[in-house]
Image (cartoon, rainbow, N blue to C red; front, top):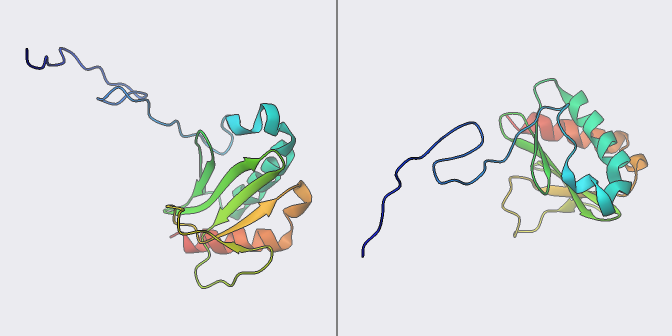
Length: 143
């Protein structure tokens, strides 16, 4: 029998040679992530507040909308925004040489990203001056 070769492979902006769809990357003004629709729609205002502060860090922050999270990067990833439950967003940050506390928690060893800490956000009020400072430090460390 043997194997049959592929007669033709078509490539464009959305498909790789193996036929798997590439994840779309958006700009900061891009589409709304799917994770904030439906059951987690109550988290939308908190997500929008985090995005305002993320974009305020610097104009060169690149925002990438993924299926289960949103990534903010400079040259390296500096923040990951995930709708973890119906009532909580997890904001993962890159904060080397930064302590931990009741609000700022260590990322577990199971996480393969470059982030070191995470913060639980339940409402837009959780995006305060302290969190904004952590975002800026994370941005500076992502060079």
